[in-house]
Amino acid sequence: LPLAQLQLDTLDVSWTQVGDVGIGTIARCASLTSLNLTGLSGLTDRGVASLIQLTGLRRLALACTNISDVALDYLTYYTQ
Image (cartoon, rainbow, N blue to C red; front, side, top):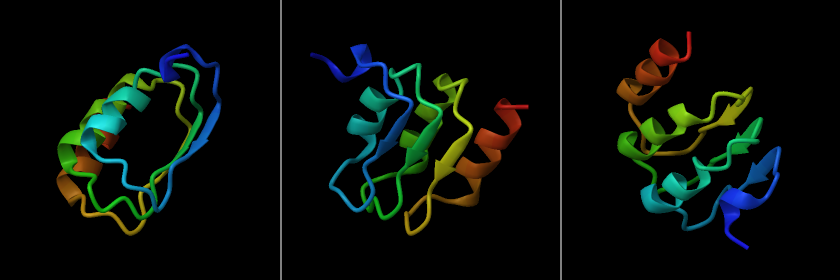
């Protein structure tokens, strides 16, 4: 069963090898309200930008990643 077809509300992939491609897949899980991406060294600003599709997301953990302030500005601007 593809990940996007699961009715997940919470997903924790912290400290795994998930990168931008995996985040793109996760971003198709429209039911997510909480996502923990802590410690994803392969996560970039581009991967974070794909999360804009998750309009129901209320909690997003991005600690210990390599993203920049640009990604945070992008998410904050487009989710207002």
